[in-house]
Image (tube, rainbow, N blue to C red; front, side):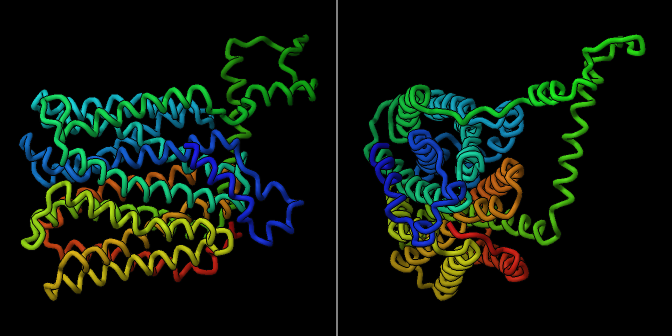
Length: 477
């Protein structure tokens, strides 16, 4: 965490010339409390490691307990479905804050990892699934990490893509560390019924979350709580005593329905405000929302399907016969190779328009898919060619995920940040869960069909993208 904080403190020396000459507009460049920002970004990294640490060994773990490759894909992808469901009550009670979701996330992460680890001792296949479903509640924190990095109350408009780039770097680190650690732990084995190659990822991650929970409790500072509706109403009433409901005269009758009347009176301006906001959203902005949601789903569908498919494909291919350790190393190596380019993207995001970054990432990812389809049809699949395809897919679609939320936050009113965060996160979850299931089924449906569907989905995105090119223009940074 210390190293990450030092890196974040280097933001100012890398500021663009435009930023240096535009200091008068500090709102565009504001950042949240640095310690809290480091905690949120570190939490995002832990969640990514939690998601990916089971990828390399879940197939073998499921087989040992009586499952198959498709069940393994469900184990990988199902947490995102529960994350989406848990967002409904969480967003109802979070009051626009972040500390409560952090506590909920740590609690359910610990419970989920412990349940995942206990499945071996209990010899109960579905306890793996239960553990991952509990992890899914913890993964609801993904949305809060994104919302925090684009929250207009604490982050300036020219900082949002930069902070989103940090989240993508954590995404790549999790994609590399998770499978690698899972593969190493499987290789080492620890041959006992409690702590072994299948269960050790669960126990270790539960311990890490317990320690991190202590740090959150001690060091995280939430953003200032906004005034409640009742406080705003009280302030308004005090400045307009003529409408005060406390004055009772001859013409005023006390009514037992006073509370509900007051509630109705308060709700009306809010409803009108929301309707007014909806009326201000143009057709082109609705098109941009649809486009970003599609790409948010698409990128995570493709990344999730490849992560779930590579261990299964590698184990089934005659020239590979990968173990979970080998599959984990392969996935990790591709993600590590992306890392220098994602660091460069952290600097490029300050000077490059979001739409161009989205186009660049999509083109790279599409190139990887087309190359993979061609080597499948020619029968020239080897370690080098498969690695080149995985690297371009991982790099391209990780780059593309950088801008989906930050672009919307720059185009829409600040009041819409919560709604756009939810829309993008639900799109991510949809892509994750369906992608993982599709990846686990890739060998059974045919690898050409597996890749062909993904190319077709990118084609739909390209149509949306080119149609809305002019409307996707936003401020850099």
